[in-house]
Length: 356
Ligand SMILES: [Zn+2]
Image 1 (cartoon, rainbow, N blue to C red):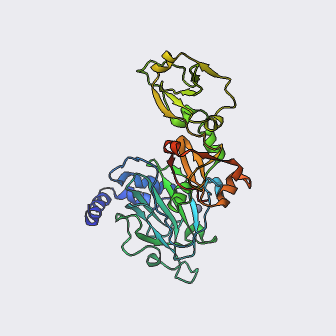
Image 2: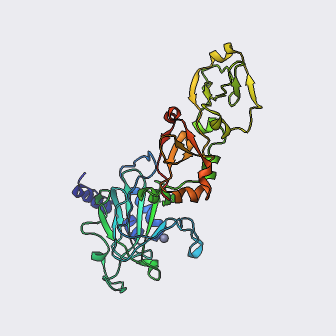
Image 3: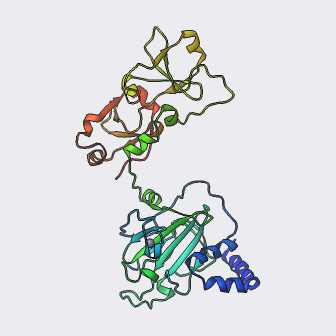
């Protein structure tokens, strides 16, 4: 659909519903979002996390200030990206501009985009000053990029506006207040998506440990109701003559510990290992190898000096510098590194490097 068609439809709708439009255009911030919902076309079903590019071009300072308290008991429903006035703002995600205020409401010049991924992206406190001043007289020409109007479709990365301090940001430092909302207007914290856009990837020992209390949870194994299990899910088993220990997965398959180091990240000793007959063991299908429990050890491959932290389901994440290893595992981090034999390295996959 080209922009002429969009405008045509918009005009028809405006003609049909003049009282509703007038009422809503005068409305406050929250009602403005309700106003969006009736002319959003079509509704796109969200199919994954927001995949965005960073919306401010240039030097930016920001933190995870989502949910912080604000005046009047409000909560902060976005992240503030602090940058000099007139820094270009680009569309974090392509989509249709459902609102670009032409007057300056209490929250300042703002653009709201219905993303082509089903999320809504809001950009607030867009510039209202004549460049080089704080006169509040810049008007639309210093707020929005040329051609940016309600109803226009933009592509990801397109220049849409300039950073400023309009509306209730007048007394604070210039910044873009950036929001991501679900279709029902529930705000979600943009922080991790902004970090991903900057390729800032962090790690949390406690979070990865908590996410993997058992091998079943680490591997995401679930019970298959159509199969008869020959071992108790979550138990440890072996046969009398051979020392190899297996983990009985919830899927009814057995997973072998490739070495004692891997075993030691999951269990303190062998006291709970049950001995079963070779005949029973042969009935249990082999599922694969157990990998290191996330968050316990750092690993490397024998033939390579790079050191990785372990994330869920055998995902290895390169620690890009010794300082990063230091940050997460302390100054003695190198005492926590274990070698994974080359033969077992294929049980692992490589995830995002830890960059911060
Ligand atoms: Zn803000």
